[in-house]
Length: 227
Image (tube, rainbow, N blue to C red; front, side):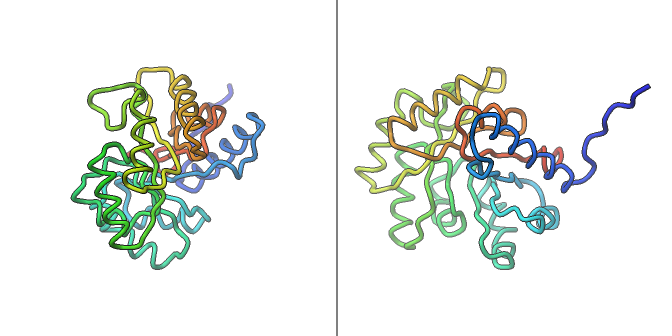
């Protein structure tokens, strides 16, 4: 009797599997694996849990909360030059200063108040994190993000009135929806606005996201384990 295959036992085993799946999905889509950036989502995990992943060569990480990131990432970044930290959770305007100083990419620009706060802090600090607009493709009232029908106008407003360079889009499809229409929709918004970076796809659906054009996939539990 054939035994069922056990799940990878360690963080590094899981990371190896995720890397292989990303490479296979990219090749299946006619893309180069290096064109897809793995964002290792380390929210809720301590520095000692993150260190082995850095040691294995990963350089791009995602955090949900500014305060949590402030508590663990400055020493990690100081000890490991070249790390890139993404804010992938909602941003409050009173945290804009800290976010601009700490994060290299802010993926959750979603309203004018945030755009204004970021523009002010970028001017004050002379730091220029890359900015992505979060689009609420499912129009879910409980979820952050610009509504799809307002995305073009919001991107134009960020560029024209706040002099912000919008280099990417991000979405989180509704949990109970088929993800592919949401990924395709985000790709369409990006194309007509001249945006190249697409942050879409998580542990459950990143291979589908790669097929539909993701340049960044945000993967947490498939690497670090369940929270």
